[in-house]
Image (cartoon, rainbow, N blue to C red):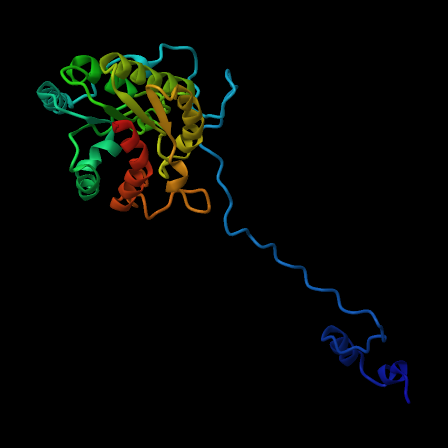
Length: 295
């Protein structure tokens, strides 16, 4: 057999160079396997985004990104009427003056919407009771304080007050920057103080009533609010004395296995307000406790 050197020796140089450049030159035998091709990095399907407004230095031991830039008077405990709600307020005062109310529902839009999205559920569970719904959309603790002190807390003596307030005190401020120059609403401590003030006002206005204090419901529209709500609920749970105030936390009933809100129970448009199915969950969750308190 002729060696490669002999073969190459009888070929023109141009042919030899062409063979080399085209990869046809004879390679020495080797047992070494070809190197594997470099793998392309795989991007994860989901990369968690950092929470908006990273938390500044904490002045009290809670996790929140809603710290104010400095000390201030707590707006959550300063009574004030919500703009453009006077007509609703006056209609509630008229109901209060008529009296004959056994169960009073007090709160914001989540309570307010028993009249619309939750109406059939309301009629089923509470149609046979003497009830009043004093919920006003977008209300905060300071607004409920004002309403109670200006006629909605006088003129009748309910047996039970169902209170769920505070969600609008949490989270990122989404309203006009001209009216609200800061991007946050209230801190955890401020909101807890606000709910505490509302409970104290209810105790003053209705000393014979039992107060069913509900946890602030979870929400899927505001990551900051979802940071705050569990901490606030821990704080307001301490108001439960099993004599006049009874705290009920039904958070888990609204969550899926992933810990996020169950989409069956919240409006997809805002991920905040319950669907009719969500109102059923609410009514069922407090049915036994409410019946007990009404005795």
